[in-house]
Amino acid sequence: MTLACRKLDPHPQSPARQHTGPWLVWLHGLLGSGQDWLPVAELCGDYPSVLIDLPGHGNSVALTATGFEDISRQISETLQANGIREYWLAGYSLGGRIAMYHACYGHKVGLQGLLVEGGNLGLESDELRAARFEQDCQWAQRFRHEPLPQVLADWYQQDVFADLDSQQREQLVAVRANNHGPAVADMLEATSLGHQPWLLPALQCLSVPYSYLCGERDHKFQQLAHQYKLPLRTLARAGHNAHRANPGAFAALVLSFLSQSSFLPLSSFLPPSR
Image (tube, rainbow, N blue to C red):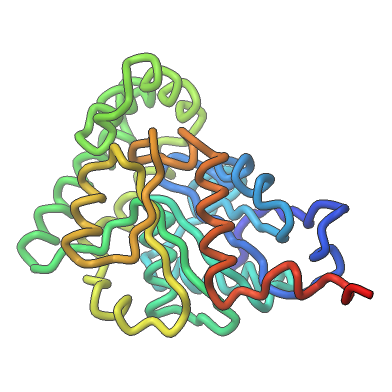
């Protein structure tokens, strides 16, 4: 099964225009779509990008997934169907959790590196996982049966969104109200932290470059990154959804990471000077 996606070619002036190497693959968070990444992807326009709509979201709203393994397989099939052989995988929140799972356990042939924004590594005990799944099921029932704006108003009162002011919350509720509640509910249950494995040991064994991006006001994930010694890069003047709050600075961090890793620099595509 392939997911809906949008492909962005490099800028016409980019030295990578004729290059067939790694793509930037972007995974959005719950309630979002691939379009959420468009401002950042365009600012990273020296490289080709693909913006994926995850199951139950955007143009993939009619698609479902049974869990992380299923979604990882769908991503692989989507990349293969679009001729993408080498890629960097970037994800925010839910998309970050899926990206980490894919990098650790998926069919990752061609994966060149991993960028995660505010993604949870998982829960370490069965008791914590069971409690979280029960909590997510309660939210899922609300998404299925209550008016979406009402549920979203409460959703964005959660502690992880504490950096948002009332106007920003209202804007997010308005933007996210175009989702299909039952589809969101299905995805929330399928990808609950209660179903996600504890990813830290596998992440520590990754053989590809890996960076963890986090807004400076996202205290929960700042603490998580420090506690588990993740390769943290911090974005100023931003909270949990850092790429939405400051796409320019976020893109700069992405490009800096790419240039400092094993990613082939753009200078390699330029003709030699005479």
